[in-house]
Image 1 (spheres, rainbow, N blue to C red):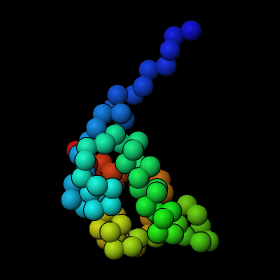
Image 2 (cartoon, rainbow, N blue to C red):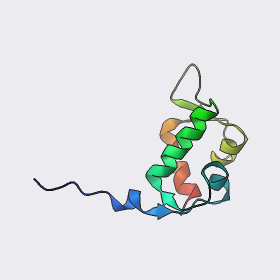
Image 3 (cartoon, one colour):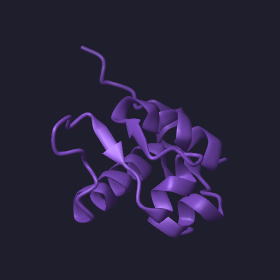
Length: 86
């Protein structure tokens, strides 16, 4: 059986812009690490909605990351990463 290949697109380091770097730091990291760091930030600051755990409530930093939205679905996070990292 062939060994599984890693998806190089997800593992390639990408550089966060200033909005994202305020949350996760400014070093280039893999997209998977960005997701992990965002979730760590969300959990640390208790930003998951109490009633609907799929929704993320924005604080000041996440509000900028979410383009001014007060709340987004956790499934939308990937599109915001694409906007704030190259």
